[in-house]
Image 1 (cartoon, helix red, strand yellow):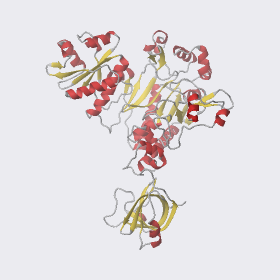
Image 2 (tube, one colour):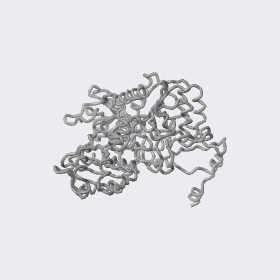
Image 3 (cartoon, helix red, strand yellow):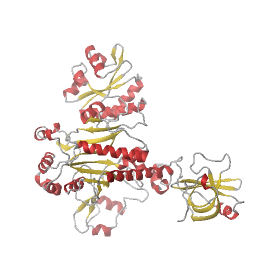
Image 4 (cartoon, rainbow, N blue to C red):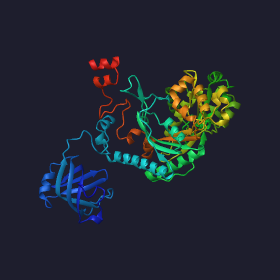
Length: 592
């Protein structure tokens, strides 16, 4: 080894010993001819000293050292002078007087500071990611990711799971997002898909009798990106045989508890609370509710449909709904109310109605359209009190809930109702099996086509698919979905029925899902599972929302990597081998 210690090892007990250290020059200070350098590696910092009276040759050589030079140094560990100790540094009681200096590599002036206090632009950070990753904050985030991965394996190994890798090159099956495809050189005109998830393979492993499987699975989806989306990401993938929902929920709560203990040194209380999908949408407007604060929504459709307010009556007549958010104790000014109105419009609402609660009833420019009896019902339904402000949206159900769920989060922040140190886990259960696609006039799977319906709801599938509830469950933390799963369909006839309802005829079922349908015929056990987003878990453990902060080499929102220049053009020779031809746009760009 080139070193005897790391830069976080040395303490007062080592005073008088000789050590050899390696690392990067983090900072350099010249005090009266004595050169002090903080030497950095991923473990920490050690102050090293080049003193002309201790070793003149190394002092002379140190004069040319610059930030990010890579050094190997040998010297004597000494106690820092009185008043010079650094209580904020693990090695702050000592310093190393250097007798031997070996410059392993000199560094040019870096294009960004390797300093958590001076974070450059996102473009610079991604272009020079290897420098960004030297920052202690980034190294700590990736260490948290490592700890999370190890804790996951430790937990599942202790519960008799088997880690099995599934293929990266596989057959396309429609699961929602677009696939990345890989052309086959040896099968002209055919392609592999890169996995969006290992869904069908883990089910096949259950059919194969492996009983308990897990994998830290790499997944890829060709979809529009944002801070919590990347084209490639990692799932903690789980599947179990001979289980019901309760078994999987209990097992996964244990995993989350174990991860938080290992990676964040926090003890979580289990079991986590549960809420049905219907209740979540009713009270919070969304199926991943942030329950760290109140501001619950109320459906007031049945109350206002008989009012004299034409806007509400017209919406209800067209199968819309009217919901209300009670901004408790807000006592908004007119300017603040106007801001809420503009926010609602920005997110798709035609408008936002409002009424202030007073000792005498409701006040606003529309209050006159609501009788005293209706006002009394509204106050009771929304549990409102004087100085509260009632905010109403009247729209089709999906849009109404979407707008109010966003407005609720905005007001939670504006009114400082959110405890950002709190961890509120909640299971959302009893999801609808199907979601009606208004644009294409057909039913889509709410989760995926392999989710099992509740047995008692199966008769509704042919008569009223919208009534069918699925054996599905999501785990939500502070309004962010961190994992979701379901009991799977293990009966081939039910699987065919579901696929048929989703619009796949028999020929398409065989073409797209044939290997699963075939496998189900040979004795599939009841099984189910769940997948957690590892990147998202790690971001939350670090107190972040952007998953790129816990991924070593992420892509930009345009799906590019500024560091390596991907995606890049491909040589015509290889395109020919793959039986591909550049499209007209690519040809034009290449010719320019």
